[in-house]
Length: 409
Image 1 (cartoon, rainbow, N blue to C red):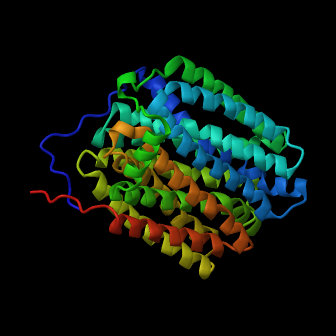
Image 2: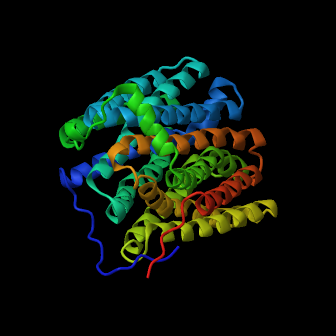
Image 3: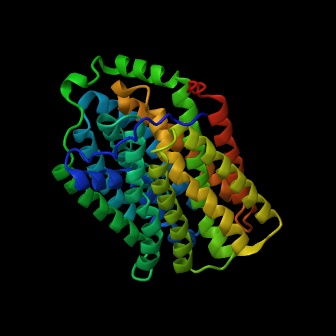
């Protein structure tokens, strides 16, 4: 993993299209996942009590949303390669608003779970196509730096969502949180309509229907670089969702934090993501995406093992939060670099490549989220063990699958 030769520093990404409004729209679209899940995290214990069910069953509402996000990206990415970016996003955001309203009105846990599935499926269009829009406009280091820039916007979602959710719970029930998500979808539909121009001209769109789409998926899925970087990103994404699924119960039930205190703790970790992403923008001026990704995964794995040890010997709340902060902060460096590397080889089908990247992320997240609950939430050890194992898997995927970096002088 050699450093990038730097005869000239890469330029900062130019905010093409409609500048800052475009950046915030793309960031808000990319944030569909954390907004949809993190806002109601403080309400999970209350939701379980309201429906008279076990914690693991309530956590399945996270899993079904993640499944919807995964399947939706597999569908929306290739569709955007064929129809353009703008129309599929508008349709997805509109359906997201309707699904959120259905969740607010759900009369049973089963109906809520079904609504979450549709909510994730529709919101996936925004996530997967936003990445494709960036790839339409930028490549290489410029793309990685723009993805880091989006983390400023995307990173605010996990900072603000649990805090906002906790405050809303003083005024309303968990249903009111889904009313807030409905409003988020409506406002984002308006923003996309006015500020997102089409970035994929007709002459660059994929033709040939389902057969050509399947061929594009085979080509992308057969690329070792795409799979290796996507899995490295996906395992870290799953580690984040192990934290998302387990932390409300661990921090509130085991360590007796209030919903508001939990929101603060969650927000601090999210600030770490944002800070790391902006550090990454500076590091990309001097080092390659691959070198930064490799070093970050080593730090994440070390912190994951420290988290496991702290949980096993019961070092207390502070001993848990410090390594947890390091693991979560590493995501701010992993996501931009791994995403840029995974999408680098196939600009002609950026939507399909983005879809595969998203599918791996959210499938791994969906598998991971209930594991924490099934293993038990009366101690921090199950959550810590899952997170540590996933950081190791991310490092192994990065080391084993991608082709070796070309030698530099």
